[in-house]
Image (cartoon, rainbow, N blue to C red):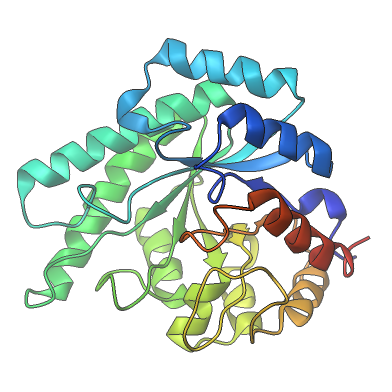
Length: 277
C-alpha cells in the first residue's frame, strides 16, 4: 500500500518566532495542505483565544486551503497536568482541555493530542494513573459531545510516571473504552522507551491515528527526519505495510530550527517524500 505524500503534515512548532501568516505562506509555498496546529503563543494559545478569535483563525486557514488534522495544545510545561495530586491544578487542567476541544471543533480538527500528565516522582505512581484515567474519561466525554477524538501520546519516562510507553497507551485506551479515545506514536518517545517501532505500530493496530515523525540521537531530539540515528525510512516502510492511514508530522520542537523554519520543514518533507507515493 505505502504512505502517500498527502499524509505528510506541516507543523508550526518551529515557526513561532514568525507570524501565523508567514507560516501559512510557507505551507502554501511547500505545497502542504494538511497541518498539525501547535496551540502555543503567539499563534494560538488555548487560554488566550475566544471562540470568535478561533473562528477568525479558521478563516485564515480556509483562505490558504489548509486543513488542521490534529490540534496539539501546549501541555508539557507549567501549568497543565491532568494527573497532579493538587485538585485545583487538575481541575484547571481539565478546563483547559475542554476549551481546547471547543476550539478544535471550530477548527474542524478531528483529533486533539493529549499526554497523561504525571504525579510526583516520590508519590504513588498507581494513584497518578488513576487520576490520569479519571481525567481522560472526563476529557473524552467532552470530546464525544463535540465530534472530536483524543489521541494519547506517550511522554518521556524522564517527564512522566504515568504514560511513557506504547503499552501504557494501549492499556489506557482500553480503560477509557471510547471510540473517541485513541493513540498516537512519537518516534522520539519510542526511542527513549527502548521500544521496537514495528511492535508499537502492531500493538496499537487500528487505534493508531496520528504520528510525530522526528529523528534523534543519544544526545538530541526532535530532529529533521534523516538527520539523526533513527531508521526513519524503515519506519515509513513499516507504516505502509501496516496500512497506516493517518498523518506524519515532523514535530521540530525545541528551538533548533526557529530561525530558518521553512528550510527545516522543506528538508523534512523532502526526506519523507523519497519513500512515499
